Amino acid sequence: MMLSRCIKSENQKLRHSLIFPACIIIPVIPAVMGTFNYLQNTGILTHQWYSLWTQHTLFYASFFYAPLIALYCSYLWRLEHRNHNWNVFMTAPVSIPCLYFGKLAVIFRVTLMTQLWVGILYLFCGKVIVGLPDFCPANILFWLLRGTLAAAAIGAIQLLLSMVIRSFSVPIGIALIGSVLGMLLSNKGFGLFWPYSLMLMGMNSNKTEDALSGNVLSFLLSTLVFFLIFYWLAIHFLKTRDVHA
Image (cartoon, rainbow, N blue to C red):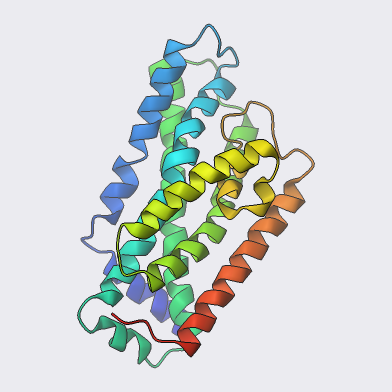
């Protein structure tokens, strides 16, 4: 009951905000970039739906996905850091885990909406703009879902960062840097040890063959471990220290 009230309260904070327009508008940018890049290189990119996926995820997963989640997290905590809202938040008759998980649940819901929109954009670009035959392979939709699960770890990290850093933009910049490092580390084979790599690996970013073939359990375990670590750190921080707002 307490958790549902926390989630409802966090949902109300998003009403009339710029979060949902950002959720819709920003993913259009990598979709346009990826589709344009595909059309300019059809002589090289010959795997149709798979090749289009490589171009969409090359831009989206590497430069937009984690910063978008960071944007959502910064907005939710920005409301607490303003005026005396932090005092109201901390003195609410609700347990700290419920307060924090309420934010986390809302972040994951908005991220799920974003991912659904990314999938719709991909299908639209493939069928209407590019004119690819048939329907996209089912495993690509699985990759999209897999990348969504990785958002749980990033959501936990970015909520912690936005909680302790008052700046709205700094956590977003950290997410962008983390994504670029994630791209480099995943290419080196160390992706499972860096949380921001999990989103790229889950979505099979810029690859036509499943890079996680045979390693899905390791991917899920890594996602769970990072989620639990940063969730625990956030709860511990809230219980033992105050954040000056």
